[in-house]
Image (cartoon, rainbow, N blue to C red; front, top):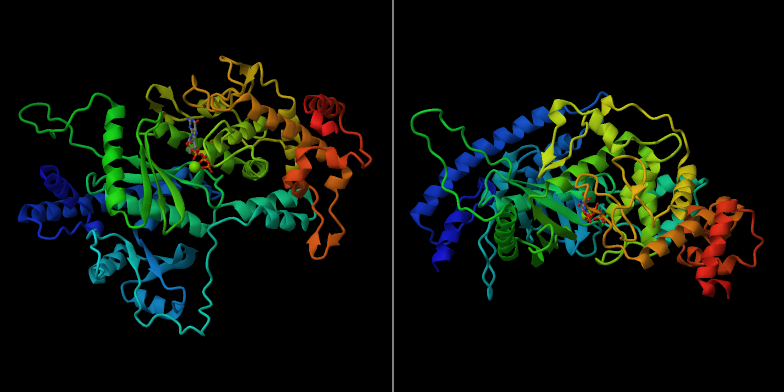
Amino acid sequence: MRSFCLFRIAMASSLAMCRLHVMGRSSLVKCLQNGDTFLHRCVGTNVVAAQVKASRKEETEDGRKSLNAVQVERQEQAERSVLISCHSRTNERKFLKYFSRHGDINKYFFYESYGMYAVVEFASQEGVASLLEGAAIPSIDYESVVPFKSRSFSLRNLGLAESPNQQSGKLCQPQTTIPINELIKKLSKEQSIDQQITSLTEAYQLTEENIRLRFLVCSLLKDIAAAYFPECTIRPFGSSVNGFGKLGCDLDMFLDLDGISGRNMAKSGLSLEYQMKRATSERAVTQSILSVIGECVDQFGPGCVGVQKILNARCPLVRFAHQPSGFQCDLTANNRVAMKSTELLYLYGVLDPRVRCLVFTVRCWARAHGITSSIPGAWITNFSLTVMVLFFLQRRSSPVIPTLDHLKELAGPADKSVIEGNDCTFVSDFSKIQVQSNEETLEQLLCGFFEFYATFPFSRMSINIRKGKEQNKPEMNPLHIQNPFETSLNVSKNVNTTQLERFVALCQESSWLLQQSDTTTPSASSQGDTPVPWGLATLLLPSQVAGIKGRKKKKREPASEMIKSLLESLKNKNPQNNS
Ligand code: GTP
Ligand code: MG
């Protein structure tokens, strides 16, 4: 009971937008709430305004923005946004009229998840405040509600719905990728492999709306965490923001408490410091914070279901599904190195558009053949695969991207970053990085990727994007990919021999397929309105790459000597392919 009271007091110190209205709360709680709300408004608004201003400086002349600048802008946008659950027949015109009464609307869109939803972005915070002021507490006859006010609303029948026979005609923004068979059809209609790669990237990448939704979910969660830590932020990392995210990818979030600061100690006389609970280690602090925030998300977070606290993992996290967005969410804290790797991957993606295209294609190819999986296990992860693509691009005779060591050499004093003893310094100013002279096509690079890993000496060598050169393996795991920042760690430690062999075999097979003219010539024929798969589409067909069995009857064209001998060794290893 006592802990419940303390808990209510802590929750009451929330920010204005998500005040916890506990029935019958004491005047002490009210006092705390008002004081803290004011404090947060001052701190929050000034911090965001200053961050937005500073982030504008982080844009190059050609409009390329640093990840930090993107994050600050998106976070600010998300704070002016609300999430609305609405009826599928909601009349768009009436909907807009209703919300416009609360403030000017910058942008809105509809999408379907478990029901119909809309995101509305107001021009200013006042729009959100007005909505919060005007919303009702749901009245439910046989159940009770947790009176936690958030920016997730339900729009009840206010005469905004169309009659059943009227078509609402609203455009719903897709939140998932097209199925693989549709993608194969789409790619088969393209006229070159380069176009196929670009088309795949366009079909799979996150949409503007999906990115907004991701930042909004972070912002809604921040409102919960801010009950305890008013100066915190929750930032997305990983594929949601590194430029390699596919529609439907998970939402990795990082609870950032570094904004919590105090005054400098006075040199003489009296000075005041906060009394703070002590813990045995940083890890223990992270675990206790995540445990409590996880509990709040579970108990109070609208639409947050299946909350699991995985606190004993190397990187403790809270995992849950956010139903209104359909995102699988992982919330971590004190995970700054992952934030740095996200920044690095983002930078590589921005440096040359071929990087993103190639990563999307390889990730999609790997998923189509079960090389990667959404289930944790001995599979190669998307992160490892991305690092493998980057390494390959560094290893071209004329490199496509620079090494991490080179990016470190270009860093200025403001870029210096050491996290838990790991040097994570690299340049943030894109304009300091010289454009590389490599002019290979996407097709050449894709073929090159498969050839490179079809022959890579995995048993002896380690993949190292810091040096841009393979290094002797420091340990005996089948696949060794050096963690770019925590250099003593192997990011692919989980991969077993079977999975690595499958990857190599598929690289050999795909490389061979890309040397056959019937694979690489656009299909002129079609079966009904379905064009015959060719080029990249062929590589995504599960039966095609799984073995050369089906192709044995056709006259083979000469593949490179190296690939031919590799295929022979592959066939000898897999006798079923010879049957
Ligand atoms: P998908 O979620 O599969 O689309 O890709 P992702 O890049 O988001 O991968 P994931 O969700 O598994 O991990 C999120 C981020 O955590 C990655 O982008 C990396 O920044 C970081 N990360 C993932 N795995 C490792 C690892 O093994 N070591 C390190 N140091 N960081 C990792
Ligand atoms: Mg992820």
